[in-house]
Amino acid sequence: MSNLELAPEEAVCGGQAAGAGTPVQELLYGREVVLGTRGMVVTRTLPHRDRRMVGAWCFVDQYGPEDVSSSAGMRVPPHPHTGLQTVSWLVEGDVLHRDSLGSHQLVRPGELNLMTAGRGISHSEESPTDRSPSLHGVQLWVALPEPDRNVPPHFEHHADLPIRTDPGISVTVIMGSLDGSTSTAQVYSPLVGAEAVLAPGAETRLPLRPEFEYAVLTLSGSAVVDGVELAPGPLLYLGTGRSELTLRAESQSRLLLFGGEPFEERIVMWWNFVGRSHDEVVGFREDWTVGDRFGEVRGYAGNPLPAPPLPTTALKPRGRLP
Ligand code: MN
Image 1 (cartoon, rainbow, N blue to C red):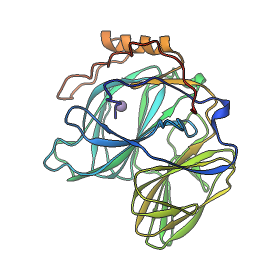
Image 2: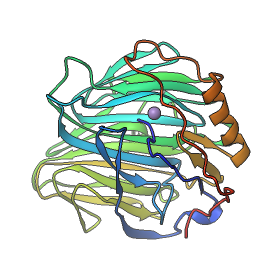
Image 3: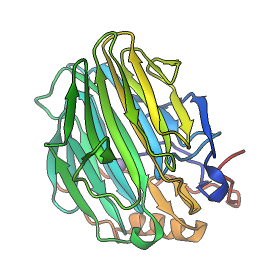
């Protein structure tokens, strides 16, 4: 996934004052963003004007379900990333990932494609030629903390994530640990990402860590999360200070839970880069433009994405909260 906005804003996120100290319930409605000129519409709930990160999670795009049997489906040309991990998770369909390390990996529902950009990588994402008719999924980004943000880029595919099944509910741990199960996906700060699938009427309580902040996104169905009706669309931010979370499904439901220790560093996000300063991000953009740092994606039928122009006004750091 790429941030394909023509004029992306620079955002400064994080900071000590960023996390809520207590449990809260904030419904954060996303905005629709078109990927490419004739691309898919995604709903972007992070970064949000009112809350830019949840733990180290700094970007959430949800797309579909969309009939891609007669359309181009997903076509995101080669583009660069720095200082983050991309987390690709599908509900339906399939997406083919290629990157500048030579990775060539289809991801399907229940599997994780995890790309750690570190100092720099480029990748493309596309619906395969022989594809499932419906595409539905999410892509999230995780900001890397200072000690690890320049690690060598690498790619992981996980098709055997831990799943805990109880009557009426199954929970897949995508990243980090939940309820005694741990994903083998590499993480760089204390965080969790998990998917819960609930049968109609099912109710459960998930154990949480009070020092983490959390958010929930309904991917399909309709559920009641901590007493709040949550249909697909908005993100429910839950704050910190919770030791458990109650979920109840009104219909067959699929929920994404993610969270982590509040991210105390201030970061700069612009286009597909996570950095620490305006000048650093300008340097990333220049490197992409001249063909440095990010390698080359082979096999994608199309040209790489050019970087959008930087804003013409001086970029000023903005706080995480308004
Ligand atoms: Mn991307």
